[in-house]
Image (tube, rainbow, N blue to C red; front, side, top):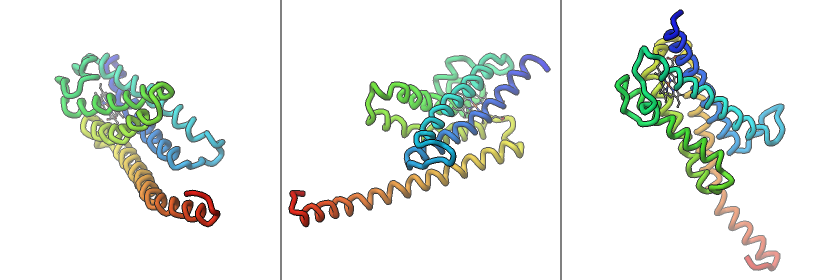
Length: 199
Ligand code: HEM
């Protein structure tokens, strides 16, 4: 096996591993927001797992990108990695990978600086994870050598199905919460009035 084909296999394998890990990270993020307690884990286990896996996914992504740049078989520069749609090689599909990377970096950096930037800003930027994930999926489908292979097809289908289902729960939860809030406020005000206190 030549050095170039080792790098190429490393790029493909780390791309698929990154897709799987980022999917689990998104699912765990939704689980954290919905306060789901995973079986066998302590109360803060879901948050810790979300954090640890997001760093692991970033490590795979670093390998994915480094192997693509170092591999001399295709011409991908460091600039192509950071600035979308500038690459000579597959500009659209690679550019989508770059967009996903930039969004993920924004999510990662603001998470590391969360104590400094405040919860509001952190949460606003964290929403970008929902945009970054589908862009990365489309990048993988568009550019991947293994896109037609059964294993990657099923991995991609399972990841998309899992995230769509979790996102559905998340939206349903938000809708229920927004319906409950006015009713809950009314009830509190009524209870206070009955108890003779000011609302
Ligand atoms: C942000 C998250 C990213 C994820 C989750 C991701 C995921 C993937 C996946 C699943 C594949 C298909 C692998 C296969 O066919 O076996 C792939 C291919 C590829 N990715 Fe990414 N990618 C990301 C970002 C990037 C970036 C920023 C670059 C820029 C260097 C890049 C470069 C490539 C290249 C060159 C291929 C084609 C490999 C081949 O020839 O099969 N990716 N990626």
